[in-house]
View 1 (spheres, helix red, strand yellow):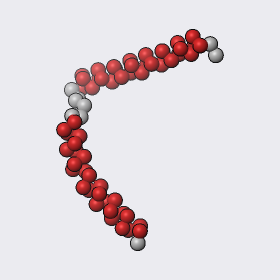
View 2 (cartoon, one colour):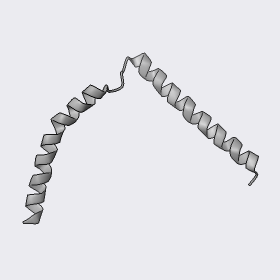
View 3 (cartoon, one colour):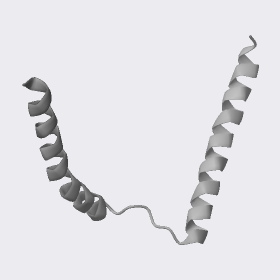
View 4 (cartoon, rainbow, N blue to C red):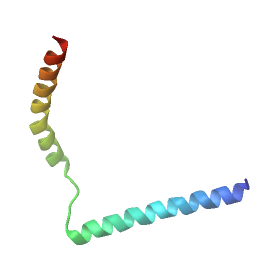
Length: 65
């Protein structure tokens, strides 16, 4: 395969990915959606983590015995 052709196809694919990402960001900005803030993510994880520990422990006890 021609090297220039390969490079051109790679550049086109990269350009499509960039355009798709920009379009997604534009739609999110229009909708007023904000990406999850770091503090919000930590708060969600701290709420879910204890429940997951309990569930995993109960499943482990159930299937080990």
